[in-house]
Amino acid sequence: MREQIVADLSRLPAHGMQSASPTWWGTLGFMLLEGTGFALAIGIYFYLWSLASSWPIAAPEPDLGPGTMLTLILVASVVPNYFVSKWAAAKDLRKVQIGIVIMAAFGILPLVVRAFEFPALNISWDSNAYGSVLWLMLGLHTTHLLTDLADTLVLMAVMFTKHANNPRRFGDVQDNALYWNFVVIAWLPLYLCIYWISRL
Image (tube, rainbow, N blue to C red):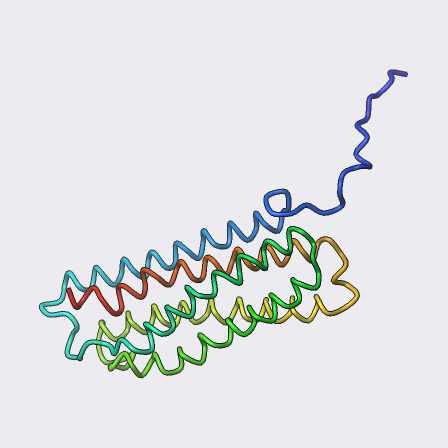
């Protein structure tokens, strides 16, 4: 019988963080797919604009107030989100608990402002192609805000239970922070398209 050499992997951690975690790669793939959806929505916007004799079509420009306020909130949220990810990497439970509560608040606040943003478009979704594409872009991004908020609230609840001491949960917090950064970055070109491109 031939002797087999087997690697001793007993010292490896049970769970990896960031790129060492399958969940991280799943989140990255998810963001790539969703990023394609945002890119297609922006492409539709410019395609319809190229066909229209005037833009916006039979509507005033959207009001800048709610959309700009939401943008400032999202950009500001990147700061605590950075620290939550950093604290999760250090497995500092108390700081992660504080940070994820703050991020839950930052997940709710944009949705409150978004409720005022839809009327501020000054056009309904079924008025014409211009109205439809604006509502499509806002609706698409709102879905992502809701998705991340749900994930953040679940993680927040878990981090205040006995399961928070599981190293894998800190990896989940990092993945959630990564996804929130994607939600923020994805909004910036949408904000420019909805509120500024037609003003140029």
